[in-house]
Length: 162
Image (tube, rainbow, N blue to C red; front, side, top):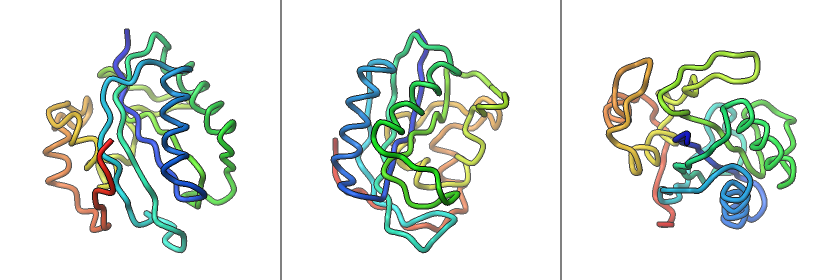
């Protein structure tokens, strides 16, 4: 069984309902959700001229290998209405693989750990909530330490507990 950390988020439509739909589909199509963070509201990162995002970290157990998991995630995003029009732009749902076991994967389709995670509070805050002691397999720092060292000044606040 593979242990995976995901980040789900979105800033279009019924944001809470979209996260709930994503969690449901992940649980059915990808693997059992074993932990979920609170839901956080976050100002947009990168492309700032868009609505605030809701984000949540999930831990899942899956029998799928990383590439197959990514295929299933892309299917879920499409089924929920995701359109890729503007890089870092508005989206109904976004599902990212942050960690896959303690593996380091660099393929044409996939980079794990997520390459920008250590620079983004909207990833680190919910991740540190459910896995503070988890060690980044390249940086050799825990999520808690990565969060303390993160220079991102974005506003992230807890919206609700799930």
